[in-house]
Every structure is written in structure tokens, then in C-alpha cells.
Length: 344
Image (tube, rainbow, N blue to C red):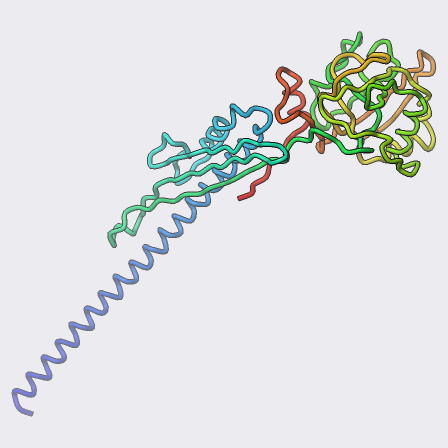
């Protein structure tokens, strides 16, 4: 082989070696880049999940105030977001590289309101700077809503027993309904001179008489076929007549009637303010849902009819768009928790 050919062979092998070395270096760089991308993408995903949890919680917290405390929606949502962390930083606008925005669509019954919480934070990469990428921005959006308040019940739904939100009469040891919570056991008394906190009602300004109350009770408990318009539709603000007399309903404390009322999964009752009067009208301020566990009659005393009930979580509230001012609004909010949910 001539010297020229040998030289060419050597040069070709050197060039192949250089190309192979360059390919090896390129492979290493690609491997490092892919590895860095994988690590930092996993980091970004983790931060995004943390941010999503924060905006979800914030939106749900804000939705709880849609009807009870509309002026506090934004502050409660921001405070809830700030209780969470993403990438080791609190999710609040004051944190480095982080921004949180709350948008409110006020409810306009029957349309529900919504709370939108958007958060954005800067994620600093760990390995990507080796290939010139130092940071990225991660953002999430959560939207929560709550069902519009019930301001009106259809016909034949409520039970003809109205209860007071605050009356305790002369029995100071009793706790008024306004101070109760879901799950508590409460007692409502008819014909009591000590605790006037319930009365039978006609759901109208007509005085409730024994015949009407009997028919309405039997129908509500499913003991007789339904009669159209027997129990009228009732809404918040309606004036309803109350009667604090037993009206012959001691039968609820025994036999078929006791079994029927205690087997009901729930009863819906209108709520009014103050003591239960005889043959006077009061305005409906809300509705509660209870499960009756027992009915008793104080035969040895003045014939008081007592309903022992459990306040249910599935409470129906009626607030006319917003809770009324004062303690009643807070009480109805507590007795009627909103079933908030994420819609995005």
C-alpha cells in the first residue's frame, strides 16, 4: 500500500473517531437535556397540583359566603389560598413570583353565583438552566358555586308545624333554635305555658282549625291520598297564622301516627320569630328540616305536646336572596349550610 493511501486511511479513521466522539458528546448532552426536562417537568407538575389544591380550597371557601356574607367573599377566598403552599411558598400575591385573583359573579336568583380563583406562580428549574431555560410560570383556575337559596316551597311540601328561631319562654336552661347546630336534638312544644316555641299553622292568614291541621298532617305523613292545594305554596315573608293549642293532635304521640311521623326521613318546617301565639300571624323567615324521633304528651300537667327532633344536615333555607340582618341571618346560615361544589 502506498504512503498516500496509508495517509488517507489514517485521516479517515481520525475523522470517524472525531465524529464518533462528537456523537457520543451529543448523546450525553441529549441524555442530560431529556433528564433535566423530565425532572423539571415533574417539578412543574407537582407545583401545579399544589396550586390547584390552593385555588380549589379558596373557591369553595368563597362560595360559602355567596348568600350569607357577600362582602367577605374575596377576603375569605384569599385567606384560604394563603393557608396553602406551592413550591414552598404561600399562595398569596405578596409571595415572590405569585399572584392570586378572585372574581365574583353575584347570584341573581334563580341563577346561581360563582367564585373564580386564579393563581399563578413562577417555578425555578433545577436542571433546565444547563440548556438555557431558567424558569416557567404555572397557573390554575378553580370555579365554585352554591345552589340558589330556596325562597319558596311548592304545594304540599311543608308539615303544618311552625317553629320559633329564638323563643325559650321561662325555661332558661333551654337553648333557642338560633344557637343550635346541625345534628343537635331539639324539642318543640305545643300548648306549653313555659316554652312557647312551636304552633300549628294553616300556611295562610286563616286561623288553623282542628279539621285542617288533621288533614294536613295525614297528607304530609302519607296516610291519605294527596289533595291538591291543601297545603299552599309558601315563601319567605309570607304571613302565616299560628295556633299554640293542641287541636286534637295528641294522637301523634301514639299508635299509627307516632309510627308514621317517626318513620319519615325528614319534615320541612317554617320558621318564625318570637313566641308562638294563639290565633296570631307571623312572617316566615326561613325553613328547617328535621327528623322526628319521638312525640310525647304531658298528660299529668297541662297536656303539652312535645316533638323531639334532630336537626338534619339537609336543611332547606329561605332567605330571599340574602340572609336577613342580625343574629337570625347567622343562625340560618349555620342551620342551612350551603352545598358548595367545584364546577371547574
